[in-house]
Image (cartoon, rainbow, N blue to C red; front, side, top):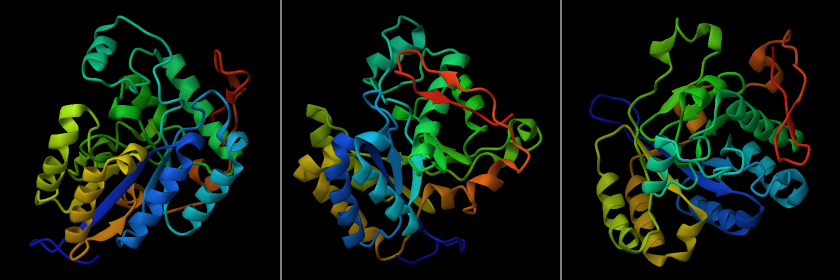
Length: 289
Protein backbone atom coordinates (compact mmCIF):
# COMPACT_ATOMS: atom_id res chain seq x y z
CA UNK A 1 0.00 0.00 0.00
CA UNK A 2 1.78 3.16 -1.24
CA UNK A 3 0.82 6.68 -2.33
CA UNK A 4 0.84 10.42 -1.63
CA UNK A 5 -1.70 13.23 -1.53
CA UNK A 6 -1.46 16.10 -4.04
CA UNK A 7 0.37 18.09 -1.33
CA UNK A 8 3.03 15.39 -1.00
CA UNK A 9 1.95 13.90 2.34
CA UNK A 10 1.77 10.09 2.41
CA UNK A 11 -1.61 8.38 2.10
CA UNK A 12 -2.23 5.88 4.86
CA UNK A 13 -4.90 3.55 6.21
CA UNK A 14 -5.32 2.91 9.95
CA UNK A 15 -7.48 -0.11 10.76
CA UNK A 16 -8.70 -0.71 14.32
CA UNK A 17 -10.10 -4.08 15.38
CA UNK A 18 -12.55 -3.46 18.22
CA UNK A 19 -13.93 -5.56 21.07
CA UNK A 20 -11.15 -8.11 21.54
CA UNK A 21 -11.84 -10.35 24.55
CA UNK A 22 -11.92 -14.10 25.22
CA UNK A 23 -15.48 -14.47 23.90
CA UNK A 24 -14.58 -12.79 20.59
CA UNK A 25 -11.03 -14.08 20.22
CA UNK A 26 -11.77 -16.57 17.44
CA UNK A 27 -13.59 -14.15 15.09
CA UNK A 28 -11.05 -11.41 15.86
CA UNK A 29 -8.15 -13.71 14.95
CA UNK A 30 -9.92 -14.66 11.72
CA UNK A 31 -10.51 -11.00 10.85
CA UNK A 32 -6.86 -10.17 11.56
CA UNK A 33 -5.73 -12.95 9.20
CA UNK A 34 -8.25 -11.73 6.61
CA UNK A 35 -6.85 -8.19 6.87
CA UNK A 36 -3.32 -9.47 6.33
CA UNK A 37 -4.48 -11.35 3.25
CA UNK A 38 -5.87 -8.03 1.96
CA UNK A 39 -2.60 -6.18 2.41
CA UNK A 40 -3.12 -4.63 5.85
CA UNK A 41 0.17 -5.40 7.55
CA UNK A 42 -0.40 -3.30 10.69
CA UNK A 43 -3.56 -3.04 12.79
CA UNK A 44 -4.49 -1.42 16.11
CA UNK A 45 -5.99 -4.08 18.41
CA UNK A 46 -8.54 -2.81 20.95
CA UNK A 47 -8.58 -5.12 23.98
CA UNK A 48 -11.25 -5.21 26.72
CA UNK A 49 -9.40 -5.98 29.99
CA UNK A 50 -12.22 -7.54 32.07
CA UNK A 51 -15.53 -7.88 30.25
CA UNK A 52 -17.00 -10.11 32.97
CA UNK A 53 -14.73 -8.85 35.79
CA UNK A 54 -12.29 -11.73 35.26
CA UNK A 55 -8.75 -10.80 34.20
CA UNK A 56 -8.22 -11.37 30.51
CA UNK A 57 -4.85 -13.00 31.18
CA UNK A 58 -6.48 -15.74 33.26
CA UNK A 59 -9.47 -16.25 31.00
CA UNK A 60 -7.55 -16.78 27.77
CA UNK A 61 -3.78 -17.33 27.87
CA UNK A 62 -3.99 -18.31 24.20
CA UNK A 63 -5.39 -14.90 23.31
CA UNK A 64 -2.68 -13.16 25.34
CA UNK A 65 0.01 -15.13 23.48
CA UNK A 66 -1.60 -14.12 20.18
CA UNK A 67 -1.63 -10.45 21.19
CA UNK A 68 2.04 -10.61 22.12
CA UNK A 69 2.86 -12.16 18.76
CA UNK A 70 0.82 -9.52 16.94
CA UNK A 71 2.64 -6.73 18.76
CA UNK A 72 6.02 -8.23 17.82
CA UNK A 73 4.80 -8.35 14.21
CA UNK A 74 4.06 -4.60 14.24
CA UNK A 75 0.50 -4.25 15.55
CA UNK A 76 -0.35 -1.81 18.34
CA UNK A 77 -2.43 -2.67 21.43
CA UNK A 78 -4.96 -0.26 22.92
CA UNK A 79 -7.02 -0.54 26.09
CA UNK A 80 -10.71 -0.50 25.18
CA UNK A 81 -12.35 0.67 28.40
CA UNK A 82 -12.49 -1.65 31.41
CA UNK A 83 -15.58 -3.82 30.88
CA UNK A 84 -17.06 -2.09 27.77
CA UNK A 85 -20.44 -1.80 29.49
CA UNK A 86 -21.91 0.94 31.64
CA UNK A 87 -21.58 -0.25 35.26
CA UNK A 88 -24.99 0.98 36.30
CA UNK A 89 -28.13 2.60 34.97
CA UNK A 90 -28.30 6.34 35.52
CA UNK A 91 -30.50 9.32 34.85
CA UNK A 92 -27.95 12.05 34.12
CA UNK A 93 -28.50 13.99 30.88
CA UNK A 94 -25.36 12.52 29.28
CA UNK A 95 -26.34 8.97 30.22
CA UNK A 96 -29.84 9.44 28.84
CA UNK A 97 -28.43 10.95 25.64
CA UNK A 98 -25.99 8.06 25.25
CA UNK A 99 -28.80 5.55 25.73
CA UNK A 100 -30.99 7.38 23.20
CA UNK A 101 -28.22 7.07 20.61
CA UNK A 102 -27.73 3.38 21.34
CA UNK A 103 -24.36 3.88 23.01
CA UNK A 104 -24.76 1.07 25.52
CA UNK A 105 -21.02 0.68 25.61
CA UNK A 106 -20.48 4.32 26.66
CA UNK A 107 -18.80 3.02 29.80
CA UNK A 108 -17.49 6.25 31.31
CA UNK A 109 -20.50 8.50 30.81
CA UNK A 110 -21.91 9.40 34.23
CA UNK A 111 -18.86 8.28 36.24
CA UNK A 112 -17.15 10.78 38.52
CA UNK A 113 -13.38 11.43 38.49
CA UNK A 114 -12.51 8.79 41.08
CA UNK A 115 -14.67 6.09 39.50
CA UNK A 116 -13.15 6.89 36.12
CA UNK A 117 -9.60 6.71 37.47
CA UNK A 118 -10.27 3.39 39.16
CA UNK A 119 -11.73 1.78 36.05
CA UNK A 120 -9.02 3.03 33.69
CA UNK A 121 -6.14 2.10 35.96
CA UNK A 122 -7.57 -1.31 36.81
CA UNK A 123 -7.82 -2.16 33.11
CA UNK A 124 -4.29 -0.93 32.44
CA UNK A 125 -2.97 -2.96 35.39
CA UNK A 126 -4.65 -6.18 34.20
CA UNK A 127 -3.23 -5.84 30.70
CA UNK A 128 0.24 -5.05 32.02
CA UNK A 129 0.18 -8.07 34.35
CA UNK A 130 -0.75 -10.21 31.36
CA UNK A 131 2.31 -8.92 29.50
CA UNK A 132 0.37 -6.81 26.99
CA UNK A 133 0.70 -3.29 28.38
CA UNK A 134 -1.34 -1.03 26.06
CA UNK A 135 0.20 1.78 24.03
CA UNK A 136 -2.97 3.88 23.91
CA UNK A 137 -6.64 4.07 24.81
CA UNK A 138 -9.91 4.01 22.87
CA UNK A 139 -13.10 4.66 24.83
CA UNK A 140 -16.06 2.40 24.09
CA UNK A 141 -18.41 4.19 21.66
CA UNK A 142 -15.78 6.98 21.52
CA UNK A 143 -17.61 8.48 24.51
CA UNK A 144 -15.12 10.66 26.42
CA UNK A 145 -15.69 12.80 29.48
CA UNK A 146 -13.48 15.51 30.99
CA UNK A 147 -12.61 13.12 33.84
CA UNK A 148 -11.59 10.42 31.37
CA UNK A 149 -9.40 12.74 29.29
CA UNK A 150 -7.68 14.01 32.44
CA UNK A 151 -6.93 10.43 33.52
CA UNK A 152 -5.46 9.18 30.27
CA UNK A 153 -2.25 11.23 30.33
CA UNK A 154 -1.07 9.30 33.40
CA UNK A 155 -0.79 5.96 31.61
CA UNK A 156 -1.08 6.30 27.85
CA UNK A 157 0.86 7.82 24.98
CA UNK A 158 -2.20 8.49 22.81
CA UNK A 159 -5.97 8.20 22.75
CA UNK A 160 -8.36 8.02 19.81
CA UNK A 161 -11.57 9.98 19.37
CA UNK A 162 -14.14 9.68 16.65
CA UNK A 163 -12.56 12.36 14.43
CA UNK A 164 -8.83 12.10 15.16
CA UNK A 165 -6.09 10.46 17.21
CA UNK A 166 -4.76 12.63 20.06
CA UNK A 167 -1.25 12.66 21.48
CA UNK A 168 -1.50 12.35 25.28
CA UNK A 169 0.93 14.58 27.15
CA UNK A 170 1.79 14.44 30.85
CA UNK A 171 -0.64 16.52 32.86
CA UNK A 172 2.05 19.04 33.90
CA UNK A 173 2.71 19.82 30.23
CA UNK A 174 -0.92 19.87 29.13
CA UNK A 175 -1.35 23.64 29.16
CA UNK A 176 2.01 24.35 27.48
CA UNK A 177 1.63 21.82 24.67
CA UNK A 178 -2.13 21.77 24.09
CA UNK A 179 -1.68 22.63 20.43
CA UNK A 180 0.33 19.43 19.85
CA UNK A 181 -2.18 17.10 21.42
CA UNK A 182 -4.44 16.91 18.39
CA UNK A 183 -3.51 15.00 15.26
CA UNK A 184 -4.81 15.58 11.74
CA UNK A 185 -8.47 15.10 10.93
CA UNK A 186 -9.14 11.39 10.40
CA UNK A 187 -12.76 10.38 11.06
CA UNK A 188 -13.34 6.74 11.92
CA UNK A 189 -15.59 4.82 9.53
CA UNK A 190 -17.48 1.74 10.65
CA UNK A 191 -20.44 -0.50 9.86
CA UNK A 192 -23.54 -0.44 12.06
CA UNK A 193 -25.52 -3.56 12.96
CA UNK A 194 -29.10 -2.27 13.39
CA UNK A 195 -31.75 -3.56 10.91
CA UNK A 196 -31.85 -0.35 8.84
CA UNK A 197 -28.20 0.56 9.39
CA UNK A 198 -27.13 -2.89 8.23
CA UNK A 199 -28.65 -2.09 4.83
CA UNK A 200 -27.37 1.47 4.50
CA UNK A 201 -23.97 1.41 6.21
CA UNK A 202 -22.03 -0.56 3.53
CA UNK A 203 -22.82 2.14 0.95
CA UNK A 204 -22.00 4.88 3.46
CA UNK A 205 -18.70 3.19 4.26
CA UNK A 206 -17.71 3.07 0.61
CA UNK A 207 -18.67 6.72 0.17
CA UNK A 208 -16.74 7.75 3.29
CA UNK A 209 -13.63 5.97 2.08
CA UNK A 210 -13.55 8.35 -0.90
CA UNK A 211 -13.05 11.42 1.31
CA UNK A 212 -9.81 13.26 0.45
CA UNK A 213 -8.13 12.63 3.81
CA UNK A 214 -4.48 11.67 4.08
CA UNK A 215 -5.44 8.90 6.53
CA UNK A 216 -8.38 6.55 6.10
CA UNK A 217 -9.49 5.19 9.50
CA UNK A 218 -11.47 2.00 9.41
CA UNK A 219 -13.18 0.41 12.44
CA UNK A 220 -13.96 -3.31 12.31
CA UNK A 221 -15.94 -5.25 14.92
CA UNK A 222 -16.19 -9.01 15.52
CA UNK A 223 -19.89 -8.92 14.54
CA UNK A 224 -18.96 -7.76 11.04
CA UNK A 225 -17.77 -11.29 10.28
CA UNK A 226 -21.38 -12.51 10.57
CA UNK A 227 -22.68 -10.09 7.92
CA UNK A 228 -21.62 -10.88 4.34
CA UNK A 229 -22.60 -7.37 3.13
CA UNK A 230 -20.26 -5.86 5.70
CA UNK A 231 -17.34 -8.03 4.64
CA UNK A 232 -17.99 -7.32 0.94
CA UNK A 233 -18.02 -3.57 1.62
CA UNK A 234 -14.80 -3.81 3.62
CA UNK A 235 -13.18 -5.88 0.89
CA UNK A 236 -14.01 -3.25 -1.73
CA UNK A 237 -12.65 -0.44 0.41
CA UNK A 238 -9.43 -2.34 1.13
CA UNK A 239 -9.00 -3.30 -2.54
CA UNK A 240 -9.18 0.36 -3.52
CA UNK A 241 -6.97 1.53 -0.65
CA UNK A 242 -4.38 -1.13 -1.41
CA UNK A 243 -3.27 0.66 -4.55
CA UNK A 244 -2.31 3.95 -2.88
CA UNK A 245 -2.28 3.72 0.93
CA UNK A 246 0.22 2.32 3.46
CA UNK A 247 -1.06 0.57 6.60
CA UNK A 248 -0.18 2.24 9.92
CA UNK A 249 -1.27 1.86 13.54
CA UNK A 250 -2.86 4.51 15.75
CA UNK A 251 0.48 4.66 17.55
CA UNK A 252 2.15 5.68 14.30
CA UNK A 253 -0.70 8.03 13.43
CA UNK A 254 -0.10 9.86 16.71
CA UNK A 255 3.60 10.13 15.86
CA UNK A 256 4.70 8.07 18.86
CA UNK A 257 7.92 6.08 18.70
CA UNK A 258 7.65 2.70 20.36
CA UNK A 259 9.59 2.75 23.66
CA UNK A 260 10.05 0.49 26.65
CA UNK A 261 7.42 0.86 29.40
CA UNK A 262 10.10 1.90 31.93
CA UNK A 263 11.16 4.90 29.90
CA UNK A 264 7.62 6.12 29.36
CA UNK A 265 7.33 7.90 32.71
CA UNK A 266 10.99 8.11 33.69
CA UNK A 267 13.14 6.06 36.01
CA UNK A 268 12.08 8.12 39.04
CA UNK A 269 8.38 7.34 38.81
CA UNK A 270 6.93 5.91 42.00
CA UNK A 271 3.80 3.83 42.40
CA UNK A 272 1.02 5.00 44.68
CA UNK A 273 -0.92 2.46 46.78
CA UNK A 274 -3.24 0.23 44.78
CA UNK A 275 -6.90 1.22 44.57
CA UNK A 276 -9.64 -1.41 44.76
CA UNK A 277 -12.36 -1.37 42.14
CA UNK A 278 -15.87 -1.62 43.55
CA UNK A 279 -17.40 -4.96 42.63
CA UNK A 280 -14.29 -6.11 40.81
CA UNK A 281 -13.46 -9.09 43.03
CA UNK A 282 -10.09 -7.74 44.10
CA UNK A 283 -8.88 -6.13 40.84
CA UNK A 284 -6.55 -3.22 41.58
CA UNK A 285 -4.86 -0.35 39.78
CA UNK A 286 -1.88 1.81 40.53
CA UNK A 287 -0.36 4.90 38.94
CA UNK A 288 2.93 6.80 38.87
CA UNK A 289 3.26 9.64 41.32
